[in-house]
Image 1: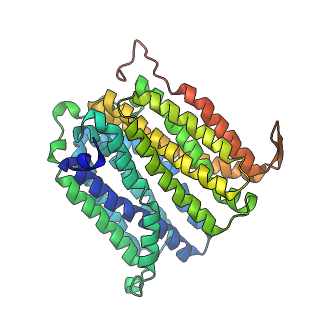
Image 2: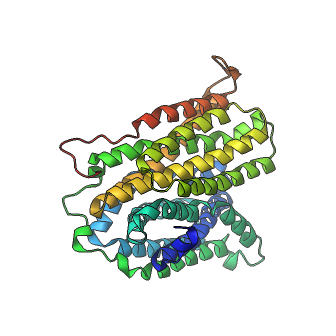
Image 3: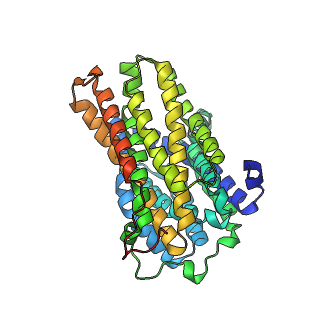
Length: 410
């Protein structure tokens, strides 16, 4: 099925439109949070605190997602989280203390980690199994492909003469962001086919950690961790590598980020061409390619080769995540699918934060290192090369191992 044919399915189209709009607003809001932290404190460390807050919610989001779906069906869970996020964002302009900014950022991240498993476990109800990879790719694109658009929208809105309403910094940006969550709420409210039957709800005796007893979850989690490791290392050290090692400009770094998004679109195109293959095998292949790309990227000597690497990395990351999601969706159902996606998003968020912090610290602590066969490498090259090789090795872990006492995953 082509993208055009997939979009003719009203339920999936409604979900995609809502996610595209709220994704755009979410990235506007993320940048506005960092700008507000700097405005209130004048401290770059306070800005870093906004990003660091993504770690603790990842530890809480999985159990809360499990409890939410015990009480509500997936549609009501998504509606509740959209309403909560809209309310929190709308209140931000009235905040004067930095610790309240942190509280709001924390609540938003937790709400997102409850929302996402309900959303992703619902996609198989809206499309055919053969179309899961393409559908996943479009949904991922609506979330992450809107990063440059969100940044541009923030800049445009923040530059308006009336953006600072009632003397509140970035008030208009935050209220537009709140409105995008309400748009998502309206479109999700139309998905009445997602009203869960009783057997789709999570039984009372099921806990979040039960997700990791599912063989398929244990097979896909190394892929999630590998993507997080590669992304975290690139996010943390990418700008240092491009500026200090390749002597590139900020504008060239902006081009590199844009090419990452273009590459992601290419990866989804490749996935569509390979439709019908085993998604777990595709996931393992994607992890190996990610590692290879990061390793080669660390050794390039010109910014033009880095551009190629960024495009290839975006393609491999999108290909891998969409394949992993397809594996969970096609082989699990009911509460096991919800649990699996709770684990999926928690591992990615937690891994991304830990990898970014670890790569940054390693880059600061290391000196130049002589590497066999390649010579002396700068610290950022060493960390990126090591990350790439570790990701390649982790691809061997993306394998389904059935055990007689574990259910699911078959």
